[in-house]
Length: 439
Ligand SMILES: *Cc1c(COP(=O)(O)O)cnc(C)c1O
Image (cartoon, rainbow, N blue to C red; front, top):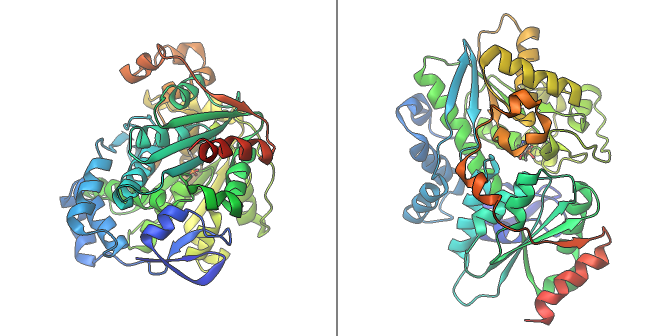
């Protein structure tokens, strides 16, 4: 597998380089030079396979020899220690549940695959790998649990203080071992900026072997294609051939993976990008003007992103052709008030409790269906997190109905440990300097 940079199409690196660099020095993002098509026979028969088989086939096709097949198979199977079920809520309305992993959010797919790929490529006795990750809530937990105890790795998580839920903060700050948490007095974009600056800091990179675990890492993106193929397979088994996916979107990694799956031959009729009021992409699709804005805090806090990093990948996948993209990709935006009302109406209609992110995807699917009544497609909205991660959002009556998994109950008993920090890069730089000064 060869990868180029979205800022330099002549660049050509191998998979391990892209995984460990995370971001090219030109600050573009890595993308596969070749997006291989899955063979038609596999797609025709996809309903006969289960998630691990589908995932292995997709990974093997995309990685194209970057990891020997026997090893890749182990990595894929170890990543997928949990299922991604497609649940029917009503005729042609389905929810793809992606929250059955250890951190109760879909980011477990990416984080588990990436940590295992990195561990596979790390050779014994090599320099410590420092994983830096900015999180608006869910990434940190997934990454922490993905890397916890992985030898030769150290994870530093930056999160916006007071802007993540109590459960999220517990997931970030109670791990100990090789996991460190920093509460930044700022927004998610500030956290992301600090991490980006660290990667661009030449002298720092001479001292520490830095890598990122944000959704910009190509190893995070790849495993997210697996569940699109698998959801399609499950629907095919149920006799459906036309499928629409509605994806709650923040940094646009999840939907970028869906679109990558599409380019690999997954026959999806339409994708829907569902956002909160951080609507940079919906505005772009409507007007042709791409204008990022500072992020605004919402109930769907993992989607509070004003400058979605993965958008450049999507534009590259479609050769910068906005018109082509608009045919395949619709987008909808919802306020907090609409999200709350949506949570209630999803419960009233289906008896289903959706987290705020999931509710936004469900609303977008509903609005899309209203606008396309003649289209007889199976609509699937992606459920990206367990509702219990966002208890404060729900009205008391609904909150009382949310089942709290045992892993969460255990978290409550642990004590949190984190460093507090302002948004100045010098503060973060000083913090990281201790890693090599003390080494
Ligand atoms: C991260 C996250 C999202 C947004 O996913 P992107 O890949 O950043 O678009 C949506 N919902 C939840 C629960 C998340 O944690």
